[in-house]
Image 1 (tube, one colour):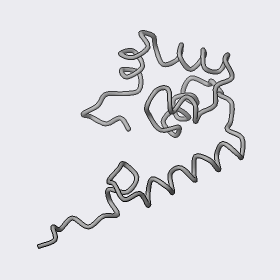
Image 2: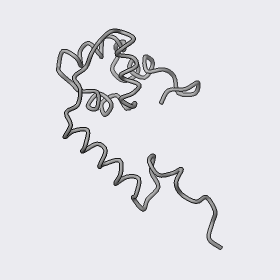
Image 3: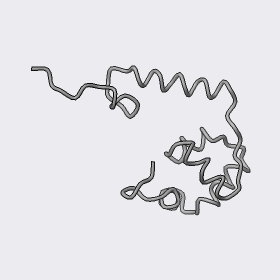
Length: 98
């Protein structure tokens, strides 16, 4: 998620893909890429991609129900994983066992 420390989506895309956000989103739309696939390629949430897509009036392909279910199942597995990760770090206790 972009904030004052990480830069905007435009900056991330320019660094990684050497093109602007509009150009990349247009390319993704032409290729028929879904928001979830774009999320994985760019490295930001699909909500951020949807926001920028609306800003440029570009519609990517919506994920099918099976893809959305698989994504949700993957996130649930990550939440209940024993190792600390981006999905479960706020649900863990922060005290050390003495």
